[in-house]
Image (cartoon, rainbow, N blue to C red; front, side):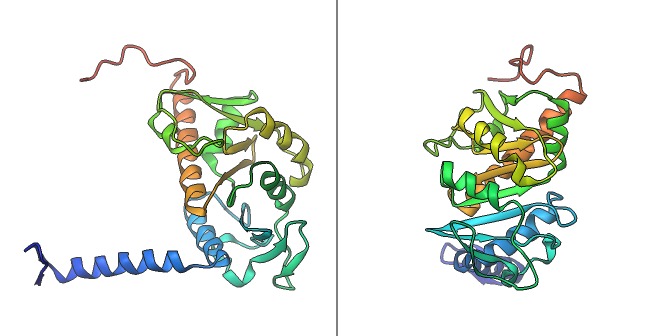
Length: 248
């Protein structure tokens, strides 16, 4: 054991944990865009959001796009599998035996309209179930604390937990590129929301940086899970809470 300047005794295990934490943070700060995409693919696969070879992620640096490959199991995506593209989709570099994700046209559309730094396309079960149980054009949520985890698209500012969050929903198509028209309509209909849900399919969620996109995606997945459980419990998610009397 050793003692820090404040006089606190630290065990060897605590020191090792702190070293790993510092090393991990340093490693993440030093990662290239392809390395970040590889990391996010493994992380989202482990969450169950990218089963099989489903889902995709893209990052943008200036006029250069980075996109995960099509048809590769996401827990196996390496940095060397990631494609580097021009804004128009032409390939600058990438593996000759693979091709960029079929989500590329939709990524390009979201970059064009909102200009984020990272876009995540997930196949989360909670999102899919929410779009089935709530069949309209919007998933409306209110009075849930994790609404604060979904920033305003226009300013990046935080929302209030008790305000209404409206997430647009579009219908699924056989090919991702065929959803471009409805996606553009949804982006225009709700320009302050950094997400669009696809019925019986998944979601496109984005942020100005990869960690902000990850945080937003996790918050929306949580909210969709709550929406599903409320529906299954016979609760109306669009009504303000009543009869709840805890300490204030």
